[in-house]
Image (tube, rainbow, N blue to C red):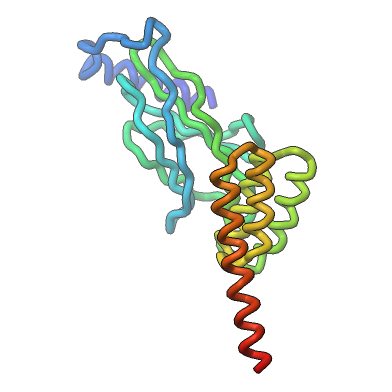
Length: 199
């Protein structure tokens, strides 16, 4: 990680000389703010990390690891998005992004967790793991696993029900309602399909 920070610091110094020397600090002397709206989704080569640019940022560092707030890898960039490759399928990854400005590095962005997988046969395994994590009160991790179950098998009413319950516990009523509606819709379709087959 120190190598990543050194590379970005050198890049920042070059960028400051080339293009940032005329910027003024509008954040009350606290430096550049952290990036917002960090998102992770799948790309053909791995995972794509995107974010909203921070004002007066010259470059960014994307951090990731397999445990919350414990980042063992990083990548420096001036551009968004960044594709992270070489990841292990079925593994939970935690991401955060920092911005670099004239006064140094920002705080971490809000952490985003994502279970990297493309095998539908593991959907039940991820749902089970998510329910266990929810029961233990580890809600962000539970969200990542249950969302993976839904992503791998989008017609799973049981996964939507679990995530609706999770969002209720996370005090996210709009998200909970949306998933409850989807669970009802999928359950109704399944019931109608079974009824038609029975005729």
